[in-house]
Image 1 (cartoon, rainbow, N blue to C red):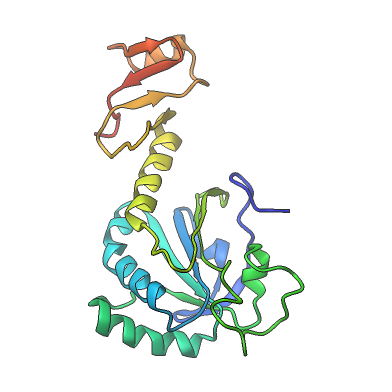
Image 2: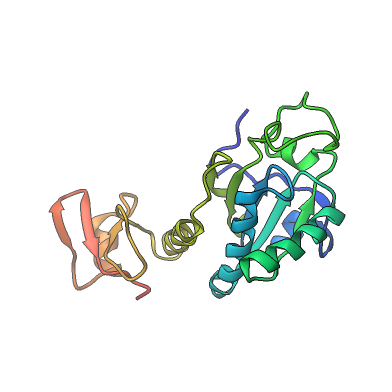
Amino acid sequence: MTLRINDEAPNFTAETTEGTINFHDWIGDGWAILFSHPKDFTPVCTTELGYMAGLKPEFDKRNCKIIGLSVDPVDNHAKWAVDIEETQGHTVNYPMIGDPELKVAKLYEMLPADEGDTSEGRTAVNNATVRTVFLVGPDKKIKLSLTYPMSTGRNFDEVLRVLDSCQLTAQHQVATPVNWKKGEDVIIVPAVSDEQAKEKYPGGWKAPKPYLRIVPDPSA
């Protein structure tokens, strides 16, 4: 059974570069990004980890924590972090989960259950599917999942954009149109009736079609 949007993010306890965590407790009452990597000391992931370290202040502003996972022991992560800082110019400033027994990778269905129970001897190719981004909300439910090929660096500016959109929906019952950016017009969701919309938006809205009700970004 594949994890889907609105499924509860599986909870786990694991060792990280910042100590032992219980995932749900660690998230607390905010949002979280869990992004996984098939192996330490891989080139594309090195650039991603560094970029996320530089972007972390933007996630902090949005009450969203970042945590990485790589199918290797925590000790390896610490060594890799040195290379990341040297080559990317950013210190890894968020925890990295060690998953040497592949427990979290399997729990999140990034590896099949029969894939063994050790990271030893495995390569990035064996772990190619451990390359997923999960956005988890305060309700501990999955709001986004993206899986990329190993050869393609992930677009974390897009993940930040999705976070903005999900938080806007949670607070204001609006959806965001194609290529939306923070501050641009949004769409009143169909679950909000015209009567309810009039209370929320007394100034009215643009409606090129009855089901397409456009209003300014209420958070702007």
